[in-house]
Image (cartoon, rainbow, N blue to C red; front, side, top):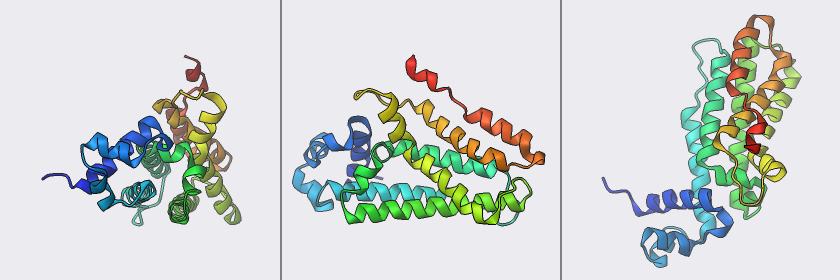
Length: 219
């Protein structure tokens, strides 16, 4: 089945935004790359912000579809791992958004609203996972601190690429895909003080899986 023009525009825009930076890519660039007229593109999207908004919605839909908190069994740290892997995939696939979160969401009220929807979904999911691990006896987090721990997790998740890029990379450098995993090690470090004795071994294995030395940036 032929891919619809609207989906082709989104697919190519995502690739261009990721590879060249959203700020340097115009609607004319996207149209020319696809071999369609600017008018054809404008039939589907009035401007670049509408394209970004549609891609943002893709990210939200991907998370909503791929993350399901099980209700028929106690949670374990593999459920946290599942969330981290889904988040990792989203951070890489839509990396242009994470590269300049504040810049993107300041572009329009619609983009800001989309980001807030994404943040709400992520925070609710993280809270449910943490609360589930407490109920399973794998974590001991005071009830009033569950929200705060989830918020700390989300702050690292949402700001990692922007922070590392600004602090460690030159203008023309790109954050290596491998180093995205380090963000989740940082998240797990926040969780570690709350891990119960019975879960320390599987938790340590999870930490080891996501540890990536920052020194790879020097190679």
